[in-house]
Length: 260
Image (cartoon, rainbow, N blue to C red; front, top):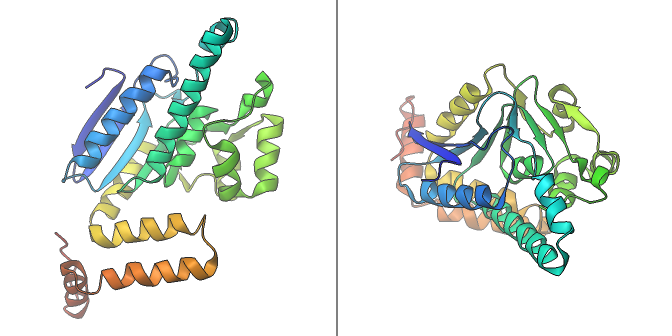
């Protein structure tokens, strides 16, 4: 496993820590390491939920490496080709996270800026430390978010609020992000809170969790009529599963369900 990311598995939760000092910037090597680590966790049958966080207390991920951008901009067509490949790499990875087979929770232990916020947006839930800062400052560089920020952010907080964040490049505190729905909750020990939430979800029936992920994800792209049809289809697939039988029996017997 790459030294740029660290993984561990405990209680059906896989935790991935991005470790790229000083502020966990997303170089191409980090993106590749993140991709490999996530794929390995998703293939582990013991992993029901994944948590992504950053090393240290300063940054979840502070975006891309701007100095590397400068070098590429000034390197002619070869540099521009590198930039195009870099953008495509980030877009592909974040789409892969969005379509993950298990829930992915971002534990924002510090600043989440630019590509760091876009990584968090690709995750299914976001928990924040009190001193977390979130923003899309690309406009200050003469650029726009290009790893999904212009698409996922409006879905999450509405187009007006997303445009204000993108067009001003302003940074939000965790407290400001909370009422927008940009973060779910704020915690003094955000990693412990993310682990607890992940363990709670991991204790549910894996088939139902997967069905819920697919149905909610589809709601962002389907009409209500098509979404409702998909919802019924996903529910019907659960009718004859051992998980449903166990869940119903546990409810009748007034005990916690013991899903496989």
